[in-house]
Length: 167
Image 1 (tube, rainbow, N blue to C red):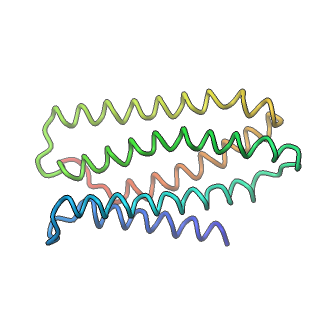
Image 2: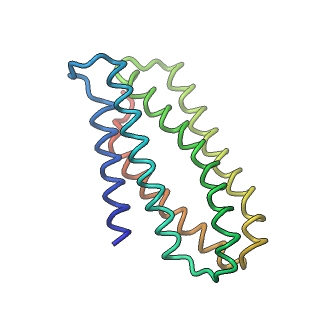
């Protein structure tokens, strides 16, 4: 049941992003449009985060003792990962605003930022592996990262399928 909720939230995210970031024929001012887009993305991201935590909980067997120390650490981890997610939302928004008139210089800067985000994501994961290993067995940590990676891929597939290729 939670998995279908998560997939529905991802679908909503993709629809919201495609319908608002790349819409060109709206009668609202750009400022109103950006405000509504930002609010919709934040609501969707909060829903995805709640579903994400529920999916981790249902797929990561923890003892009561392990759960006591894992969940606060998990929330710290997700908070750091969210900062990278914020940057991705900004990058997608910037791309959507400049899509029709994208210059080589803008494209190069966007690629540089995207690759930096990937590096930062890996750095955060590397930072937390030893922390998770202190409170969980290594196989459980591996399982946790497998769950996280699968969810990240699902979200990125949904979002990227709605972003047109550069002209």
